[in-house]
Image (tube, rainbow, N blue to C red; front, side, top):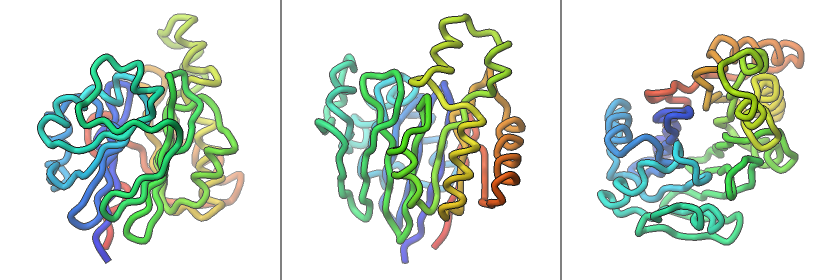
Length: 257
């Protein structure tokens, strides 16, 4: 069986990119920061950007697409995104493949399926990726837990989920009232308690490896995330391998043959 690698290249409001490789093929989910950062992050984990066969965009916010133009010009790979997101992007990558709604795409050894997530963008999706005998889920940038998100992720072997803010840090932190309301709203970002609950549900359903990402630099800490998860796991008597995705460098969750 081909080697399977699942990692965030970076994760946070300054930029997001998720990398999944199976043998000599790979995909990206989102391409934030810039092309140089993506190349350096891949080099740090011993990977070659020429392996990438496609990019799948979750939504159109800058921290998820800022590297797309340069990356696609250099590597000429298709970029899959929903039409609603495409319509509010100033300049689309010339390799854009538009989808009217949630979709499934097969690229090399990957079967990639989109599902809706609740976020204040034109349209936002998460993805499941089936490859190398595993199913991987990616769901960030969502203000609340929904039945469809839970249903899509509960069959995954491994998943990246959002744990954006600690409620007390957000309440007392530097953001203005409007931004606090936006982040903490139903279409903003996921709190540590909600992320911990989702992690526990997934662990109970059989997910063995979990990556908590998109932490706010102003309203969260890795320690607060882990405390919330550990408390919820203890309450529900579940276990899983849990890691925190680094903001500015790669975090590998799976690397196995």
